[in-house]
Length: 223
Image (cartoon, rainbow, N blue to C red; front, side):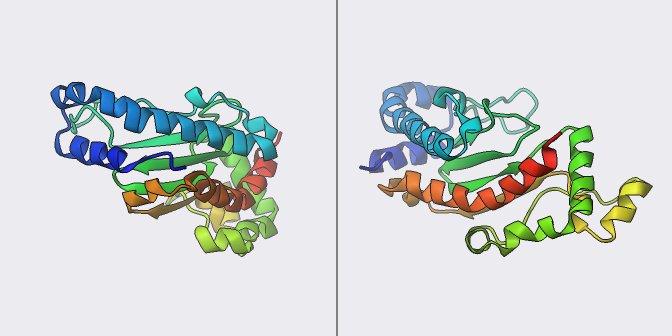
């Protein structure tokens, strides 16, 4: 049985064309039935699936989801609602910056699946950099894993152009030292994929492939 339906896609298209409070209030019951409820049901199944293999990711599904309301206080884009929503599963909370996570974004733009260490604090970031420099073979573990390579190909993330002298010396032999984050990420830009009756398996299969990186990162962040 599918989580989302054609009525879910109709709601998303309507919200994309008419992103206003007046329109949303008029279609609130459709949002609740065709978007909010299946969204939460998917989060419940994804949280359960991840926690079975990695118990530290046990999380209340309601804490893994996001509000549809946008924070427009500091944004030039004043549209009030998101047309894509995420589900993020971290270690006992949605965002634990000290531990790799799993995330999926789904909605009008289709599906994006990723994970890894996204926004570590500076001290931990530099610890991970030094760990990769001291363990050079680990940088190839994920890209050489067949499932990871099939779905994600490479370790991604924002990078510094310049580093302190000690780190710059390490980066000469290990390019991942330049990274500020270490993530896996891939996109499937077709919202009709939301109708897949095996949507949870589609996501979990790719998270399992991304675990090749997350397992490396768990060793890197260990204290």
